[in-house]
Image (cartoon, rainbow, N blue to C red; front, side, top):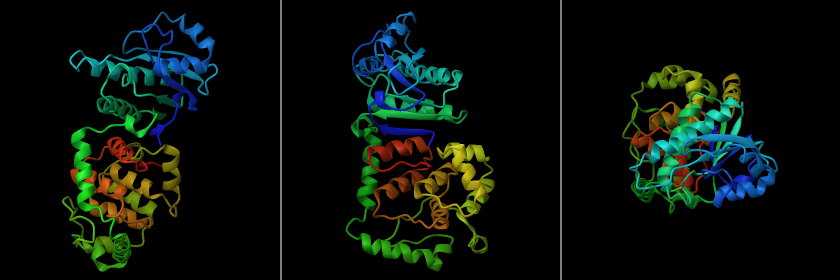
Length: 337
């Protein structure tokens, strides 16, 4: 997928470029900066000596030398001083200028650490939000594979308010004690006539009552019963007045993958791919269930992954990067292609 959060040592990431959270001298230091210089070898330092340093928010590029990456893009993040000294704009500039530099050098992939989130003290949740916002906006216009590299899940921290809200939703809806019974009912719903009703009715053992349902006519749903997933997806794209490009970019799915889906009526997607498209198209819960049904899937209250998806849809938040941030924080697999 175009943007992915991964756990790894950034010096071991195979990409066209990795980003170094450097200091103003570009001559090495501690943390990520020191690790990159050590892994790249002394030739990196020699090239950096020719660059005459770097100002906060700017970016400069060197070769990768002994690193798996072909290039290193060096950028200097702001020191956190409470958020009142233009730190957010400077951090935004770090990501944007690094991406622009990668584009100018025709790079196809780039890996970022969480800039300024270490010794420079930028709050983790705020640092990640800036990264996701800048990279997400860039990918809406450009084709590139971007990684955000963290050492562990603790490095990705949702705001306390959002984390607590999602956790409360999961605790309220989760049916861990009845998984077999729920799955039996979920399977039955796929062939039950209630699947085609205008409003889903749920008991305690079923999914949450919908707050944002779409109005559908029974005859329209019956006309679409024999559609494949691919056919249903293309129809929904037309109904939402969206372009193919808008759709796959908002789904965080690359163009080649979308092309395979579009050109193969019998394509069988993964569940995460289906949900990614549902998010991109801003489908209501019942529409999302319809699209999942076309691919042979359903949503379950015994799945934390499914409940997190339901939470964001019910909140009307269709930002796939924020959803993936939450999925990562709750140790769930991400929406992807």
